[in-house]
Length: 152
Image (cartoon, one colour):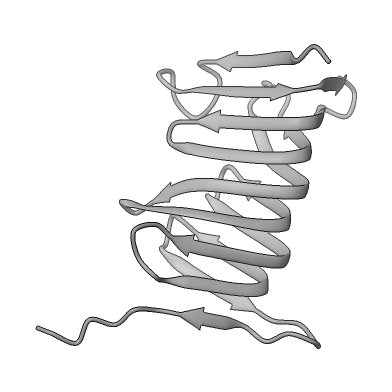
């Protein structure tokens, strides 16, 4: 199936940054200010990548994004505070203005080049304030694996 490539240049966060979205299918609803990408979706911006079956992008009137919502088979590679992470989740929401990532449903996030891993039903990452919140659900508690170097 031929891929549709959707490229927005100089409209995301800064003039020097571009967002690249690739998918099998693209739909835009101008009245709702919403774009949907379906099938083998790949999003790339700076050093951050999202892979999913479906992504919805909500836009402002000036066409700048408000949020991204990725669903089904979501995998991420992101950089925050000089560290790199990879993870997976059932649903990922990213809110542009606040810099908040919300992973929901069977979520796991691993810091690369370490053994540090968190799993939970909901993982909230506030990149602007360096705040992390992890929640479990009724059937599964939060798991936090963190390598502590006690040598100082």
